[in-house]
Structures are given as C-alpha cells and as structure tokens.
Image (cartoon, rainbow, N blue to C red):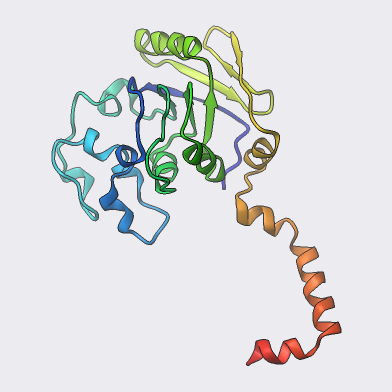
Length: 216
C-alpha cells in the first residue's frame, strides 16, 4: 500500500449527498476476482451514457459531458469533495479500490458510511471529515476557481487551502500510523515476520511431529 504523507492535488467537487457504493462501482463489475482494473468504471452509470459491462474498452463508451469527472477542468483530480453520508449502501471493498485506481488519494466530506470509511483506510485512501460549513466553503472555492488545489498534510492533520489557511481534521491514531507507513493488514502482519519465524521454529523444536504432519 502506498504511504500517505503530504499530498497536493486538484479537487473535484461532487455535489451529491448519500452517494452509495453501487454508484461508486456498480454491481456488474464485482464479478472480477482481481483487485485491479476498477478505475475505468468508477461512477460508471454517471460517467457514461451507455450501459457498462465488464471487459469494455473505455474508449468505445459515450461519456456524459455533464458529469463532473468528465469536465476538462477536473481532469487528473486526486481529491474528491463530497457531501454527507458518502459511501453508504453495501459493504463492497471494491468502492475504495475503484476510487484509488481512478487516481483519488483523499476524500473530503461531512460524514461517511462506517464500513466504507474503514475500508478506505485499509486501502490507502484518506477519508477526511470536516464540518458542513467547511465543506461548503471548499465547494464554493472549487467551483469558483478552475484548477483549484488543496494540500493535505496527514502528519500535521491539516488541509491547506491555496491561500495558506489551514483546516485541522481528526484521524484515529492507529489509522494514521498505517497510512503514514503504507501498511495494510498484510503489511502490518509482515512487520512481525521475525517474531513469526521465531515462534514457528520454537514450536517445531518442541513439537517436531508437526513437521511430519505438515509435510504430509
């Protein structure tokens, strides 16, 4: 998992409440057994005018010109600005995968569905909670100024606006530690690989018959 320390990026404002995970990555794309390739189908039903199905060439699709991510001024956006209850609906982990694989590193919203919120941290995506008023101000600025960018400093827990004003945000200490280090659940376990190997060696030394059973 890629560490998150300081990120500066273009902001895309998605002015919708209660964006659910089926909108983020529609159900027909969950058939894949891989964890990659979901970026082209992020917000598929909103991004395209034609129905989407797995394996399509995105170049053959008909983009919806009114959808925010299809507007030229937001091309390459890596920070998504959203409204309350983002990520509601089913618990599919494919939702943060799709956002990450599209190119988003962080989301800023007043609130999130709990499962989506936790899944985001586990997949290297930073969901930041700010107040309705603060989010509203960022929406106004992002819509008013083409090329609007924010800087997110996770270590200091601040969002830095273009004029230098800092907005503090809260993040749970363990989640922050994992994002700063780039540790997903497997990465956390592998940090203890020496202890795991020592435990296995001691266990086989005291219970050698286990080796024979494992070999069988």
